[in-house]
Length: 128
Image (tube, rainbow, N blue to C red; front, top):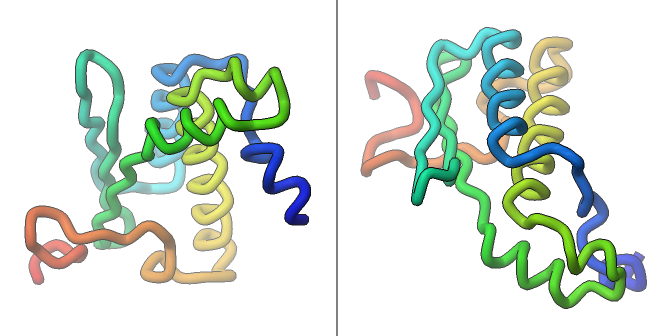
């Protein structure tokens, strides 16, 4: 496994744009019953998402610079040319879809989904 880890991220390619992937994430959240969601933009590009599901607030802000550095240092030439923003949002979409399916099938609770973060100094649950 360590040899593969040196090659770069496992999921390093996507043919979709970051904007399209964020749209897919919002559709996915709506399909799984998220009460609300918000996309934060920086320089006209999606930089973070926040959503409320089962009364719990989640925020996801990919580290685009960190992923870009990892892709640039990859031993795979196709990974070195990948769009870090698109790859990051593709990974977020996959992570969320797997977790939301587990919550729906009751294999895990929404409270155990990651990442669960604090927003503006408040607890992750509304009303607390």
